[in-house]
Image: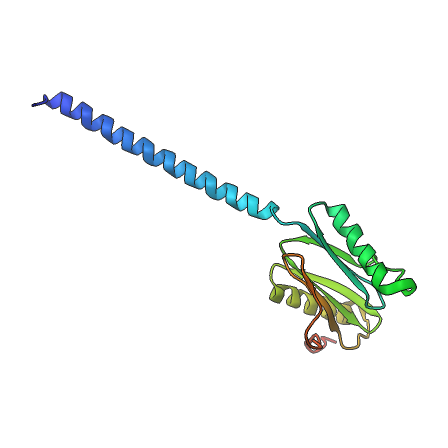
Length: 170
């Protein structure tokens, strides 16, 4: 069966248009799926709250609701500290899909956050150096009290980890 030149061109044009449309639909579907996956990943994680009291007691909790995560962490801190931990919740942090590290420097405590464990450690070094150099606090050695991973699991350190501070700028 022989087609005329215009009929062949028409068939080719329709075939090319159909292939182009199918490719475009596939591309749009893939990029939408990739966008949905990225958005889902950002909000798929629970809120993680970490609080530390001046006496070194701490509480950590993960929950889809920010307020509940904070209250559970404070409640856990109070349970660990007894009557001496009346400042549970004074130093608290909340993150999603990030690490939180709590340090105790004598009576002074603070929490540092970062996307990874290494980022959180760098933030802790920066915070301790600022407290020493800018605020003028005489900080003793800062020891890691607890590390809370991006998944919300809290783990006291296996060994005594001391924060290594750079030399003072003063």
